[in-house]
Length: 323
Ligand code: UT7
Image 1: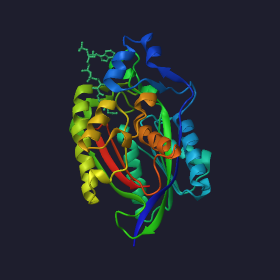
Image 2: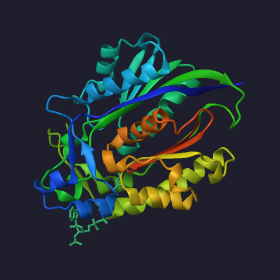
Image 3: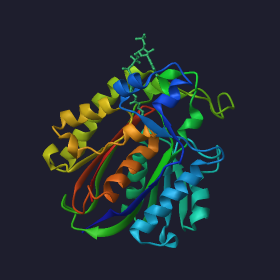
Image 4: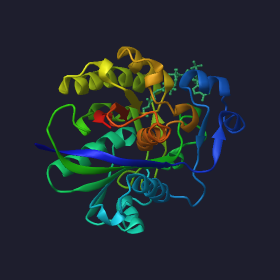
């Protein structure tokens, strides 16, 4: 037998305020047609003034705990993926810990849009190493706070939201038929740091800064790196693309998602898409999509779920999970 972590439940939260492409037309030099054609995004949710990343995270985590049917007091680890912490320190996860009343320890991790895959991998490793038994893995962002509303090449792309899953360790036979996280695969390449970054920070400008991106280069890296990491994940488990029941990708651009699905020869009805309604919510995009497809009945017990994401760093990764 081996230690594995299975997902007991999931939940998500989106701020009430919806901003459509048409709304943006009056704010920046853009059109609904351009945004839809280049990205597939039609609308995004934007957090209200005073609504913090921790608020979004607590709301999503509360729903995940309810869905899992477990008490907050039984959680001994929180791994929160975020690029938009409430404060530079301490970890936003500690605020979430206090609000929920979880035990053990709580930490933030920073891998931008790849954050949820990184957080899932970290929590899975804590569980398999015996350092945690039940973990909350959260992706939560108020990414709108990093946007330069004068830069049309970035401000139309992002949105706010949060998603969470409850992970629990159990003893499994150790085959690819096991439920839970089958494997996770993480990569980063700091030589591409300048392709997607924020032009501020405590140690540089002393300010928060705004997101800057070389979209075309990131797009090229995304297609090639995501294709290779999903192949790596399938090969590690002796699986063919046809074994995948659901692709739950990071939701940055419909064209990137379509490209990966084509490479895997996955029909579009096996791909969970939220980019049209959420935009790019960075670390929150995968758990938001996951929660939607679980709660509407698409993802069922025993299904093979493939997750992949890439973001600033560049940092990218994939996770293969049997639901
Ligand atoms: O989540 C982290 C990972 N991030 C990503 O995966 C994002 C990857 N990149 C992308 O998704 C795409 O590169 C973008 C959606 C960001 C841009 O799409 P693109 O097809 O690469 O467009 P482009 O940057 O080549 O720009 C084409 C044209 C330019 O005009 P010119 O130079 O051809 O006259 C831009 O100035 O579109 C113009 N443009 C816009 N026009 C209207 C750029 N942004 C806008 C806009 N509205 N919002």
